[in-house]
Image (cartoon, rainbow, N blue to C red; front, side, top):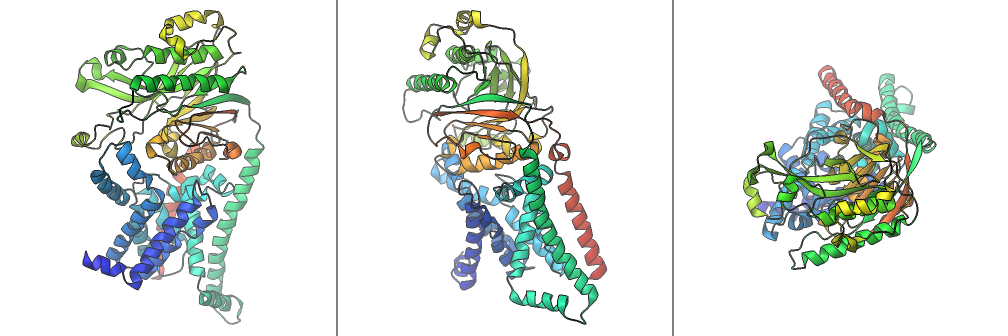
Length: 584
């Protein structure tokens, strides 16, 4: 421990800390919500300096990788501590070690990159900028990350370069970043450029060497400018695609409470919440036609509208919640997509041990009939489940959710003109159960016809592109419902959306992002946030937008996924192995 502090008090140690801060700080400020994307090209320089300084010293590179991980985590993902204490319910003396351990495990890409890159550079023994691209791709493919594909998504803050994700995904943008940044790092030495100048323009020099230099420099510039040119072409192409139709969508952001451990009255808070939802929906919809109302994850926490034996026996089914959702659908003659808890019994055996809970979102049509539901597949560790059974005793807040199985799109119906029947409101649900609500609006019931489908994603799922492409069919748009209130008033919610925003480009579909407490937004098929109109943090609000339905769904990425990147990794590895064998 003494040697550890002694090292970081030396000039060499202080330079290492500066490298950590350069990489962590510049990458953070290049990303949302700061979005100074030009800084990302400087961010990897700290990594390159440490690799060069300790090339071949594997233990030191690993330790420095952990240093990068901790500082990077503290800059970009400091909100993890808030999540562990609030979402997970852990006391501070357990949350601190969890934060540190997760900083190492979920940022293992740093030591893996340093070691793999140093190994390649040492073996090849020549200046090949592509080595940096191979190493970063290897480190991102084979290490766990809290927010995967981070580097490429930071590059994706540039609207032109981000269009390349349709073919190369965010991984391809990571390769571009590290190849270009390593070229910049090596270019900081004037002597190197003088040497290149002499080889290229002085008579009598080795022509073979000259051709190699021209090919090497030309390939880097060709790829760099090729990304810009292709991005501009794709931007122009998709900007001029005419939608097959448009849909009017209303996002309701209720700012529902997370919990009631502070002694507040549950009944009073839920009553105020439902009044807010009622009022926001009525204000947002007005008397205009609305095709879809979207409520966020945990918009009405703790309850279900799915009337089954399991939900009734566990007292999750709340008839007033069910009545309110039906009122919204019938009053505005529209589809309503909302989040709820759902449960069933494994193998139909009604015991506590066989009870299974699901983070579920359901849709009811304009006639208030349940049309479909989606159970979250990707669950959040320490919030929705624990990795080990014994850990549940450490946090009473953590749920015991099961992963859903279905990957079906959600169908929605053609909407109609808002009902002329005197409207029902939340306070009416005290006297109108779900059946009476439908009976009250019986003159507004009409034959239903499916208008289309959308792809449902809950919270974290939107940032996992390989998962998103497993859904079958051609959705009209993507709906992402989330509850980022667990992370406090932090940058997490902007990071979450910006990582998910890349799906709009990869799939060329609009995204409707509905949050519980802030940063609800509409994002078009070019990854642009419409009018940059984010709802305010820690607030209740509504946001209305016109969503374009973009034709076709077989983009290059959706068809082939990351196959081209795997091919790049295999071909590059084979080439460098041959080069080392042949010329070293």
